[in-house]
Each structure stands twice: as structure tokens, then as C-alpha cells.
Image (cartoon, rainbow, N blue to C red; front, side, top):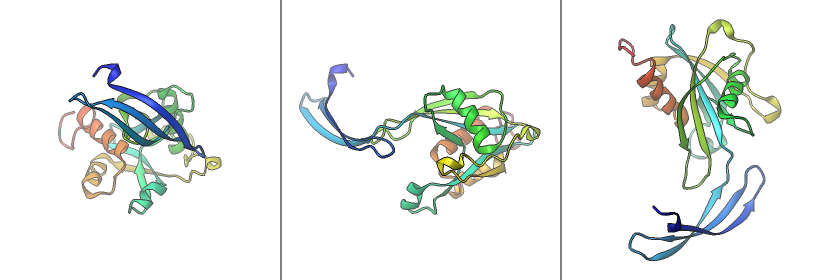
Length: 198
């Protein structure tokens, strides 16, 4: 598509309590040549980073469990199993992933490997998520994890067998999209399924 297919006409801030919520009006030339005007409410989210910790020898992963009010409002109990994650807040994505791993899980990680870069929900938010995987060692736990109390985080650290975690996608016990994608990425690139060569 050419750059002149869509033109932003107006952005109006509706709320700016946590992240800006905008009403965005744009003009789009349809494929048949007709010009149409659309208006959408968009959260102008900060980009984020997430990292899934895995141990090759033990075939295990480390996840977090924390309450998410959006999931509760959507019919879930709200306590989701997730990869460690956070907003970039001006940091480089890899640096943020390293910091979130330490803060949320208590594991010291030396390096992360890029997996994917994805828009989370492009019809309603600007957020782009940088996804990583990183190998952890059980003897390199440098703290309890649990997140940042001052930010209201109350996080459980959960170590799972990798194949059990994969099975939890099918049972609906893991429903967080970034975590599902990272588990499938690990299956495809690093760990495979039990008994398969990776």
C-alpha cells in the first residue's frame, strides 16, 4: 500500500490516567477508490519486552503467576501464568527483558536470545512486544522474585516441566498470548517435544 492510502485526520485524548486513550479519526482510500472516514479508540501503549526462561538439562521453564484485571473482566479468574515481562520505559528491549527476569523470577540471566517482535492488538493499541528466550541455571537464583511491590506487583514464581507447560496450552491453563507463543517458539527451536531431537 502507498503512504497516501491512509491519512490521520485528528487525534483527541479521551483519558490519560495510566496510558493515553485516544479517539483517532483517519481517512482511508478503499481498494475500489472510494474515500472513507473512520474513527477508533486506541490505547497509545508503551512497547514492552518479555522473556521465557528455560533450562535445557532439566527441560523446565520458569513462569510467573499474577492477577490481571482484564482477564477477570473477560471471564477468567484473572490469575495468569506468564513469561516475565514489562514496559520498556526507555530501556533497550534486551536490557528490559534481563531486568524483568531478575525482578519477577529472581534469576540472574547473562543474555537473552531474540524470538519475535509482534503487535499485541493492532486494532486497539499501539503496543509492540519484543519477545526473548533465555537459559537459566537453578543455582543462579539471586532473589525471591515477586516483582516490584511499589508498582503493586504480587507475583508467584512457578517452575514447570516444559512438556507439562506445553500441555497447559491445550487445557486452557496457559492463555496468555505472549507465553503461548514463546512456549511454541521453544518447542520449534530449542527443546522440541519430549523424545524428539531439537
